[in-house]
Length: 308
Ligand SMILES: [Zn+2]
Ligand SMILES: [Zn+2]
Image (tube, rainbow, N blue to C red; front, side, top):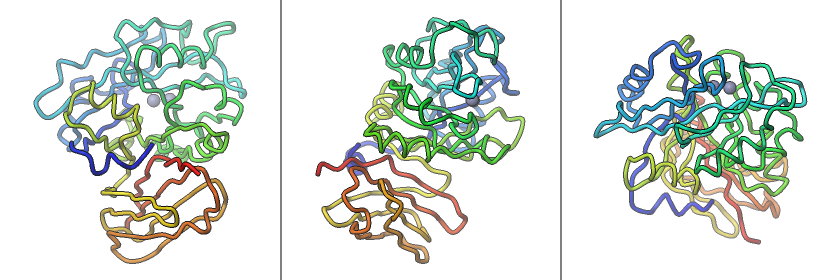
């Protein structure tokens, strides 16, 4: 991605891309889930119920809950095929047609000979969906598992439900391994809300689009015109040959990461601009930015690929 979208026309729309309802194992109806998110200040959500036979392979039609200030993108959490550890894959697909063909996934146990995770992800991507590898830490995903999912646009690097319920919410190791393979993947923070624990309103994406419609949001997601957050806002990122400048809501730490252990890091009090030299990043082909506020909340840019 580039960082041009920060300064193009349009506005940022706050959304949650990973949510469950009573159409699978969540405890609130689709309408109530939409109501809660809109009341909390979100501009959109994707309801992504578990696409398994146990729940009649739901792709919830949430179009009735759209209004002037809130929209929805149809989606699902897809399940088929076994990871190296023998457990079932979890793949997020946002922007699915409601008639997307089910795999053979009767429940949460993998079925021998069923469609592979790589194949269903590609099939979903081919319909126009935005695809993310869900909660890799919680899943116990290996590097070779991750490498097979070539249709992915992104890795879920923060899953609020996993963070709150089992402290396995992060996916940065998986993401950076794939970046270091040369895969130009983005990242997402989500809730994975079921509303049966404090698993909601904790991780979101801020998507830059000229209008709050499913089509515009989906296009921006696939282009990487967004950032992810658990609190802070990113206002602009400018990359030059020897430094990165970041404008953000008040932060105590700003970090630039690349393909090596060393980073560029600036600590301070209520920083809203930060200029970080890139000399410690070497010739990393990608950079990404993390902003941390005084409450420990974080915002993350997508990886920025440099031509050098
Ligand atoms: Zn899952
Ligand atoms: Zn989920």
